[in-house]
Image (tube, rainbow, N blue to C red; front, side, top):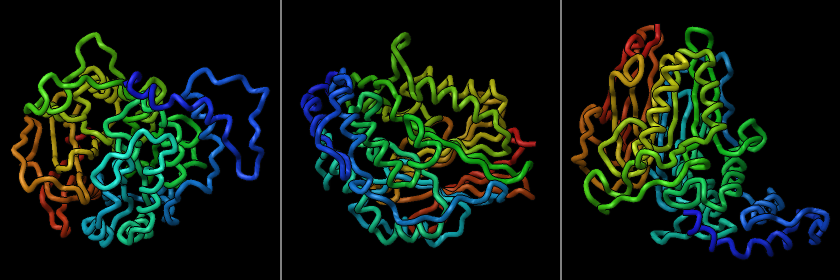
Length: 397
């Protein structure tokens, strides 16, 4: 991957000398040391791109107050901004305390069906976010729900890309500027991970948005392209480097899992629990997947539930024995890029059949009844799949 991207930034050293600030001089700082790499030169250039050149989402609804009780969260992924999104329009008619867009919120590496990558200026990514900002269904959801967001590969800027994507610093700035995160804590560190908590003690919901792109090491390509269970990737061999989150994000996550909370919604743009397929997922890095479960165990974090996207198919999973309580996951995908009506995929952890038609998800928390429900809803808002979970089954007293 690193070799692949190196040739794409060969002219970056000259770009840094041409960058201008809004209203500033075209002359480079002659006292600044020369960049040590093309990527470093690109990053200097990106720093001088004026904020006015970056798209911004319409004004949104503030997040709930820190003491607000959360009882309903909507979740969705995989939204092609070039296409109508009636499922997003349906989602916008719902009532909820929070809406999570958890990756592939635009397809910024594609123009129509053609890939538009290898652009140092990330023109297509910027255009995609600008297009999203004008979509009526997005405006309706944005103006109604407080939102938290994560990115995946297509709103990162390149299909299946990880830490060697050379334009990632600029992609992060585009992401954080669009979503209004540039002035918050997440805007102060590399990567797009952040967390927020809501509700009083006994009813506190923590939402953790992971970044599975910025720091992720390379995946291991399949040795049998298209074969069932090995479609694109195979698990990284024992002894080879595996890193999904990067050391700083891992440390941050360990700390967040020790924050006080009753229900913890852990958002990963890619699937966590299933191991039956060969698409992007935590299963491509078995040691990192095990590390995630071990971290939940070692921190004593109760009430962890995973929300994921990416797959263009909806799923619900449950598994015993990997956490001190039942591990649960809802995969909500996609809003407007369904590729099938049915799927034969069946993981041992899976509850019910897969649901490939357009969909979104809901997390319903019944504080009085002490239950949490993971729900998949179809394009008309009807329940397609559901798993009702007792608080006691996820370690919540």
